[in-house]
Image: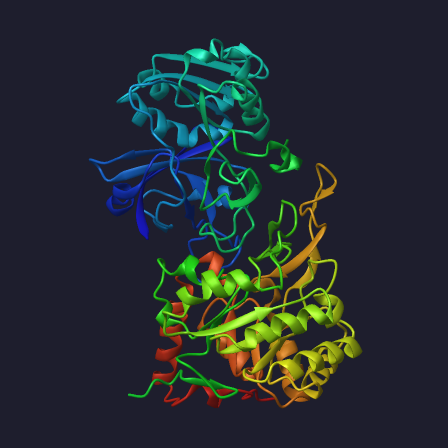
Length: 266
Length: 304
């Protein structure tokens, strides 16, 4: 489908935030879903070739708009940052399996780096029916963005950075105490952060754990088999291959076989 | 007005010459909600082997300039599950089904082919050119004697369906392989499979793919593919199905002029799932506007 860019701005030299108008997209979007977005605007130009998978950061049902938070890492996201207001861009429908939303529970949302993108939409939605604590980590000050939204839609918010420039110095997972007081933990961010979050909950049977994973993707619709995740299938007790784009990107974090999740990034 | 895109390959009629390349379209079902599968000529399904195959460890893909590298490793559900769980669903659509298959040994090739030959598929496509698995695949496709041997053996078992052999570009002279395959009794060739390539992360000094090397596809390889189709056209007389970086109707026409009688769309399906029906429309318009009654008239129409 296509949409109109109503705003696209750099938050700093590392991150950008794009707002797109598309009522049809917004209608179907759920927290945790993503889209595949074409960063090349011209016909007959094929570099970069593939669409970029980006988590849905926020939606505004009234205005029919949604936003995407992106980190500028390569040529695709660089092009994305140069797209101006009023440009028509093309993208897929909302893709993937969304988060399983709790009702009347106490939950913690842990986000790290650009992994906070889907957590804004999630936190806002969860806050309607749950008590939500937000834990937000980054490597440096530049990684800590849009905190006013998290503040508004949470009971407590804690921030950490690896260099101590904002919040507590260290890893965000170290700030999550009293883990048993939570019914569920939601997490999205760098793989080491997710693995650390898993360590917090792995022996707690009463604490559910859902994570959103990111992998390189070519198609985003389950065909290329480039984004395989290994999980332990509860029913059969056996290892199983699933696709991050289709069965994910949201998974039961306790089923994931963490040692197999992209070793290069762990 | 007659449909100028109706295509006949080895006695099989296609609504149009656009076949979805193996490995880029799953079992068709992945795209069934995104596009009208009745609009595309055919689907070559993800390469089927005798038993289920898990494929290579991650990471498996990496984008490169105007292309991508993949080393999926032929992950597939195996022939039995394909027949039981996938085939009945894709048969509902008015599109031709090509069963792409492979084996680690000649015996495996023969066994899978024997099973598929009796099933309700339109054609068989034999993959002797996958660069991403240790045994089988490209080992058969880069030695003309072995190519002849494995295709001959499979030919003996495949008695009901036309047999296509998918060729590797990772050879010094593709014409020799085309001839081996023709001599062994194949009904058609498809060319090209991916070109072996590699990409290195300079920060970690490690390859981006766990398999170290991968198959390069996408528009980056199109000129190589067109040239190889041209080489094959001058060497063999069985039909050639052109593959390699096709992104639009002009690319299709190039392959036709070089000698193709049908084409496959691969990586473009990843770039835009709706690309195949769009190319079909564009091709139809081109033929009508240029008074071409059937697209096959363009095949081999290169002027030098």
